[in-house]
Picture 1 (cartoon, helix red, strand yellow):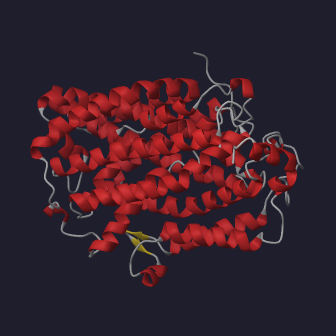
Picture 2 (spheres, rainbow, N blue to C red):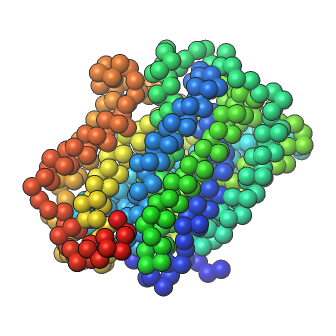
Picture 3 (cartoon, rainbow, N blue to C red):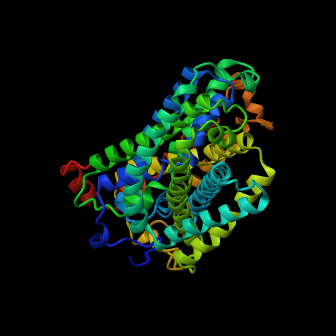
Length: 480
């Protein structure tokens, strides 16, 4: 299969041969991995019991999916990735906000996936073959996972889609076996080793788990969904079918692995660490399936994240090819893996990362969705590519390529979220107004959206003013 040559340029309709089923496959298959499973461990590690942990994951995932899935429709219309598409709202240079947010999201999740996958692999190999868990073993395993991940990401979308189809079936079977393997030691009681509720009370801790473990999953895809839907043709597949596929793929692809993580956290009594207790509690017959899950699943998930990182860097540096950009970000992601292993506490690092990125990314997504509604899904695909051509002008040029109003709205929303976040090492000053409950994602999204609406209430949406005839045609066809 040839290496994909497309970067963030517009995909011709003849090449847009994927469909809604492919979207479900890629969202399900790529997420059945330890990098997503470990998020189900967070609520138990916060001191919550079984039902509280399950409810926090389910509620957060459903709320996040309801908000995130419509972003899939943006790239369905623009035939390019979401950060480039956001140029319609932020300007062809202002879309760099989305590229940076997407790059940080994908970087963190790529490093996390390789990190936890490598840790489990070393532990399993130790039980199977006596491999010492020293620095050399971790270095070799991390390097092998990173190399396999880079190969898939460089070959591109078609290879990653084929891999996801296989993983959707294979990883589901491995998780079913995992439920059987860990069931004898399962308990619904809170793990006493956690020392009680992390934030001192039930509801603050439950809300933290809802955001960190549940909501963070869908929000991680706010810039990624377009990487897949840009290969779906709106001429052959309706917006409604694509939206339903995005909802189904996100819900199944996130709830199945995360709830498995919650289940195994109680079964393995993994209060303060997940990888070690998971391997120690595994029966001998499940070690090989666990090794397959840690290796193949990690490569599938990290490959998609790295692919997205390459696209985002390609959007930031148009002169770099997608393949070259992917190699560059792979080096950074691998370095983060080693830093994470040697310098970070897993629970603290994961919680801080997802809360900060959720606060920063949510207002960007809200503003992008407001723009989609205003222009009713009609974009000038050629004008979105002005920055990539190193040119000037077009209807999305605004002021020197930046829509100052949208950028200011995003900055105000993100700043509000950062002031309202509750981290293990930092408490935002706005927490006193919310009773100590982390509402950073909610406040950042609401404030960013309201400020954007206020700043732009007197001017027409560029997209809406662009092509009213196309809007009328699409409305008549039942696309909206």
